[in-house]
Figure 1: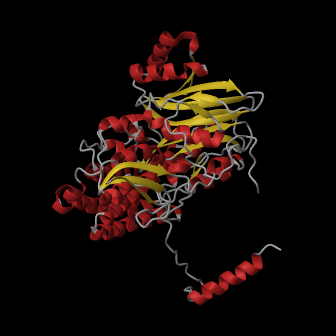
Figure 2: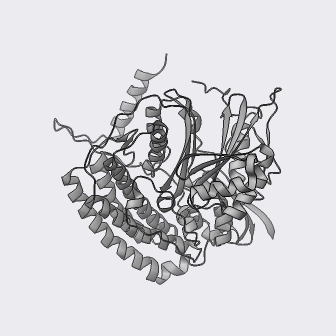
Length: 150
Length: 393
């Protein structure tokens, strides 16, 4: 399927709920609301064959948290992304697990919990993965407010 | 007596790098396996944010000791995409050349390690001897055996001359002849085959569900290779086939890697015969305009993905790296289930976990003709003096 065909199919099914852009050939972005991540991902997997999740990238972009799911259908890299505002009281953000759709996401979700402090709701195995067991519970190294001690 | 749990690692003779496996055993059989990583976590993603893009290339090079160019290439590809640079074709071909040499030495290294883990140490010694020819060629091309330092933003740092091409062609012929011998061995040597056939099974469904990458996925019948699916560095012009196997076991992984070597030699031959003329580098600005870019790269161990976000300064806002061994970890746990304890080392080795191969001393020739060999006592003295000189007050 070419990029235009992929984009047309996504637009036909999800309409305004999924805004699309393309950085170049084979680099497609689909932006959805947080609540839509799971249904859209399931549809992408079942209907468009995007069954490979390369990784999940977390971003701390000032006022927002962003989560990027890097999927691909064997040809095009299709990044499903969502952004949502940070809580005013600094509470840890919640995202849903996608391991029931793509089981290979488990380690990436555990890494997100460690490095960004996301709480992945429904994660089958919430243990630490990257950081040591005695790492402080409220310090998340990839957040922008974490400064490396020189 | 089910439910016995034994830890293997973080430090264990069967592992070459620190990671911790926990096995639940029923007699000799593994019922369940669990892994804990992070013992060698160096905070590189955070460190990228503190360094300029140029410094970042050197940092990316040091993510891995075996596939060093597999990390700098996606890093510079991302930077070039954000800068909208048209990199000279000659530079792209040289990147692919170094990438393929890296794949050859990595696969030969793996064959040796696999031989060693199943008690076939002659194979280990033969492949590692042949790998030296490849390492020498990398040294001829770049000046280094491990961290080649070939990539820069806008192209490559060194050109390839006619003499180097002639030597590479010679090496390629020699390596091909040796590899044909290893292919016969992987497909016909009964002791080797019976040791690894049916061991470490990864069914195709699990390979897909758990997002396995590289030879691990291809040996389970998943035809997936970034060089074909999402070409970069001119791979769409180069002739090669994606090798798969459907045996889903370690034998399949060995056969896939051995046959992939032949494809590497094909690509190297094509590059040497068709190296485009022209520059190897164009000037690149230090500041990179705001934006995001994703680069995928087929490392020897599988898909390697880099994500880069720039904020318009000379330092990246975020660099995300996912190396192939990480992507293969969930699938590895499946291959370890229901195996025998004695098979653990070869099953873990079969994913080709990445460890540093930098353990080699380069002997520098002293122009004044002095002997440059140091005794142990001299080394100790040197270290003591160095420390007292550099110790912080």
